[in-house]
Image 1 (cartoon, helix red, strand yellow):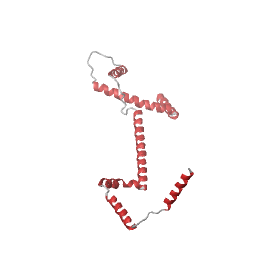
Image 2 (cartoon, one colour):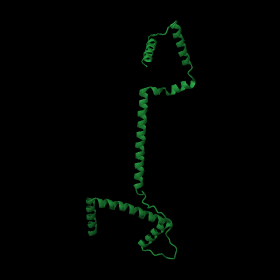
Image 3 (cartoon, one colour):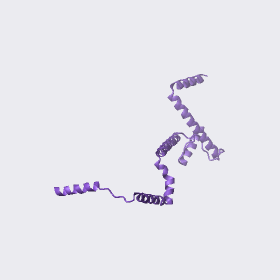
Image 4 (cartoon, helix red, strand yellow):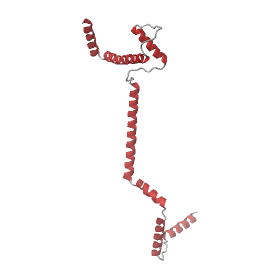
Length: 177
């Protein structure tokens, strides 16, 4: 084995020392240059278009700027969606602004009308009523609106001790007069 290794080493040494013989170095240089120019001229139209459109990818500062811009757009979109969802949540928690209560079926509407008749002391009679249905509906809506407004005011009074004391004093004062 050592003989084979020695022969192998000698052959490698000879090959390392041997230099190629150039008979005409200028002809070889010209041939290489001609081949490079041919390869350069073989670039197709689609490759040129793609290089023109996406050549910016190789420019570092443009690539980083576009990445930063994309991140800012994503953050802005997230912020905008958060605001929208917060406003929708606030809207669902609000009461109906006109004070009307949402009625799920007709029986609630009839029950409200009966309650109104009892509050006013009227009795149901067989004769025709002189109050139109529209007027009754308007009356019910206004009573519901007042209930909502007074509920808000009562909640405010209950939560603020100074306001509660002030209101009680005024009520006592009016009661004395």
